[in-house]
Image (cartoon, rainbow, N blue to C red; front, side, top):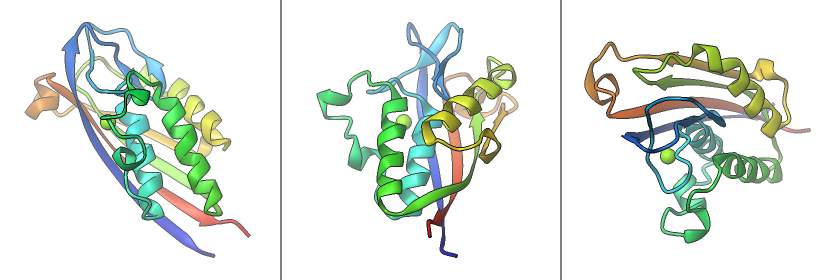
Length: 160
Ligand code: MG
């Protein structure tokens, strides 16, 4: 069996007047994430982990933030297109695990819907999609509510 592991890390600034989009969901909050796309930090790290597993570069290589085509784009489209690249290389998903770092609001109630959204895009059972959330105990840019960050790892299996 041929296995490949990938890792992704991303940060977005938080600002008033933006939507807070995480894991494909828009979460009600007085601040949202700033970015060229919809700034979905969780979908971005999963894209980067998938690309990294096959040494295919990163999300910025494939979807440059200088390209007007990606202005305000739904990151679910970026994940779908990234997944197509992985499948074209002959790999399937063993599992993804991830952590979102956000001081407020609590993400726990939204995690089941995020997992379902990502599992649907990747065409896998929801049991293969791990999402965790943590605050940073009011420390650093996350704790000061200036930003949101996320980490993800993926394991890919070569398809027979
Ligand atoms: Mg990003």
